[in-house]
Length: 611
Image 1 (cartoon, helix red, strand yellow):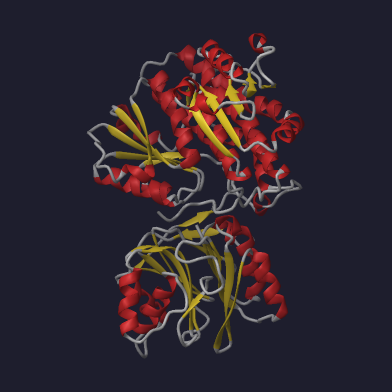
Image 2 (image 1 turned 180 degrees about the vertical axis):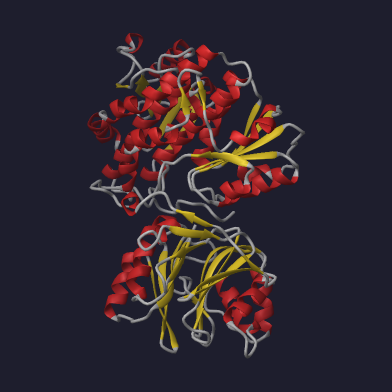
């Protein structure tokens, strides 16, 4: 969740570290800090609040240094205040450490350290680690040896970077369950960061650490080791996106930019993969695994949040077109209930970042049970991408807004491609395949049409800005869209919202409906349209304020709804993409009108790398 960046080289470290922090701030913005190796000392500046507060503090007392680490925090252990901000320090001030993750045996280690005479000034588990390093650092040994010795006693998830004036001009970075990468800069400089956004201004060449790795970064280069002390080799990956991808590009917020990028991101996820004549797809990431996929008798999808909603749409598609039983599981619950994973089960992990801690844990559970594993991820080289047997990349580019938008619709299309692959090898005809391919080819242009509703939806948001609750209802493919629409509104505007299958409204939620309750119906022209019209009648009879998202003029709804949002029509399985976009815009404009921080909603962070 937190963001880490480190730099060692020949340039001034402070501006490089601050720039990296700004690009990582979507990962956490409770506090920020920096530690610089300034001659023989470690100089630390940290502030509660956002990176701009840290920047102001540094301007008061600038520090010249060519090696340092920095951190932007999403609070887990301890309140978001100055003592709990990172970096955390050794008692003598010679070691500084930044950390993302949760140390599960921190309390036991703290007791052990207190018996050794150590005093603690913060509530963090991070301070335990830095003081354990201090305790174990033997005379005439190197920083990396002390870090490795400490980490062999640590239980839990961590991504850390450490500097010390006792062994200067060096950073030691390590990971276990919380991602960290190395940026291979120009000759004489090396970086580390929580993800590529932290280092992209200086390099596109990155090395991903594996769990149980630590790395030593010096101007002369870097070395990677396993905690046992054995040196290991790790592959260099090329980042495929550029610096402009993590800039706002003239938009007021990243969220709005990413909503409007969706026509292009959908083209990217399909590029080179559609076979029009055959009504089929070419998926390089699964090409060599036809035998395993032919033997699949059941699919278990594991995901969290928005990715879980994408999985629900994927479930409907795969069962309809490929006739494969699918279960969509909350990754956070999956491994704690002893799931039944019989032979022929494929575990499909869905994650934008490819680093989601709960999804990774579910993936490991599936692998231990002997299941084949597949990933649908956006980030090339991410942990899920490296640890699944095969998979599909989204190619959506970096998503900076905490509330996922373009990644969700890209996931829907990626799952459609996978459905085509599985369906065409089972019971799906060439004609059916061609129909889906044709609809996919048309989809980006249809999304562009939906985006032209932006002004209309902004006016609609103005009308409902004072609402305290929202209800989102849909059936079939539109039920997951209702869940996603409600989640987006909650995330960015802080309005309470719930998504339900429309027919389930009668089993409880209908009690909430009155003339103050806005109800959003997903009502495109599909096989359950007439059923949804009946549900609209039920809400109208109770004076609910109805917003209907439709795919034609919907004459049956004239006089029955208060507001109508018309999207273009396509095949039912892809209507979920088109009906999602106006709900993204509605959430965005509601948040802006209400003065919420759209890109950095309170209490949220982008990549959930702690359990």
